[in-house]
Length: 240
Image (tube, rainbow, N blue to C red; front, side, top):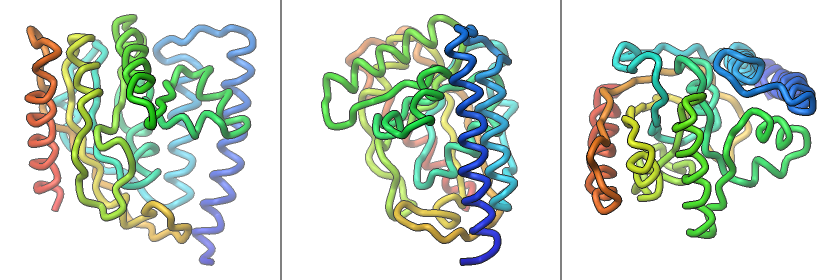
């Protein structure tokens, strides 16, 4: 094991506990979830700690495309845990994730994720998955946070884009918010699913132009899905 890999795992453990405990304590004292508050600080500082320890700086392109001052839905590719940290550390404003429910079963981390307002999704049950996206839509409507979704539904084992699920696009239509496509490049090479050895390199995060959902109906979700996927493929081609 390299020194860098060992240091990454040490910082991952220590920083996760430190920031999670802070979020849990804030939750116990009923600190409100607001833009720029303690939960946003915990999310961003945690992500930046890990990226620094891993030696994986993020270079963002296209942030000027993001409409300021309004909640959005970000749709990103997903091939590594490093996608999450790159997104948290880079996207502006307050962001929350629709995340697999298994993460909400990890001691300490679970309490922090609930307190911060991240949303668990049961990927094995269609009805429960749609309930999670309904909750995400309510979060967006409250105007507190934008939501990040991974339309592939899981991490890619090859680094290539998987087929997209429909549910995230039903969420965007229900909330009537723009979808901002994002492509995170090089994270698969850093730490793919199932790997433990770190291969540090810079990360590129490419942001596309927002895709409107105004006037769309639930039956338009597949067309919207295909449009967002095409935008993400274009970002992927640009990254390469």
